[in-house]
Image 1: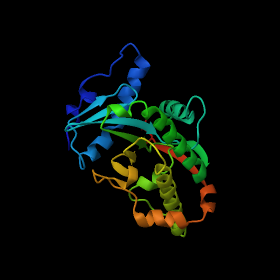
Image 2: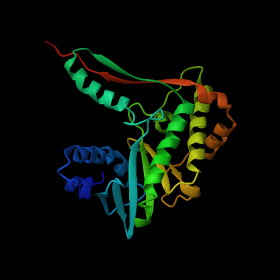
Image 3: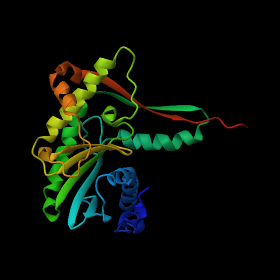
Length: 253
């Protein structure tokens, strides 16, 4: 297991201690990055990982190169001022259920179509691209990491051991292929990032710029992209329901 404590983000506290909320956010982001960094060691050995000036969120040091890295959570729908508010509701829910003595808790994220989620992905990429255009010149490369967490769309693209619903295998494969094709098409638009990388835990799916993949990160299979291109656009309007489930074993009194 690679030793992550060698990186500055885990040995040195983030700057600006007078801004406690900002500092806590940086610490949470560094924890969220851990599984990605563990997987990254299979492809590239980093000399250090430092906090950036926000933006970017992090700076990866590799040999004589510095990589500016932005991190964001994928959300299922376009958001307005205040971001994706269901995330805040979810955090409050996770705290509240610890006080409720029942074995199973469910959180409803809502119903979203693939069309809505792709529009959200495009919005997030555009927002990050506009910010990155101001700092990318200070780095050898720039990466955008998009975390697939609770309530995020596109979990099927990075899920391991995914089991299709009996009788719906072809439909669900078409849906995943359409999602992969949609994301790939959006990533072909002009943007400043060398890589747009989706990750969940230690599972990584990269969309390199201009198909230039020097680190040999996992990318979508070409046959899946081709299948997604051919699938009818009707699939874009299929609704998906997302839930987070927490099981609490009941304690003996």
